[in-house]
Image 1 (cartoon, helix red, strand yellow):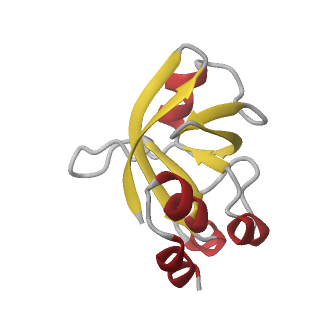
Image 2 (cartoon, rainbow, N blue to C red; image 1 turned 60 degrees about the vertical axis):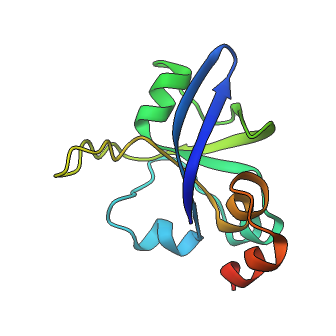
Length: 125
């Protein structure tokens, strides 16, 4: 599940894409090797407000500071930054692969991207 979102930290804000994923995506995807902690199955079950940031998002919000255990705002909800993805650079088509935020699928559907709870439960199963 994907969509666009404005993310805010202090006086900094950034328009980026958000993807709702499962913890399996994090371990099975060659494109997203996390260099810090990631969210868990419990985060998916609870629709936790936990985010994993791409390097472009982290740099634009936090500069050169280390972002873990910081809060940012998505759709007026405070989110904990659980980690930062290993930088990937541009895709062959020129898209910045580091300009993304990953959230637990249930969080993305219920709190950020606006899907109703019935659809969110169906997607999580």
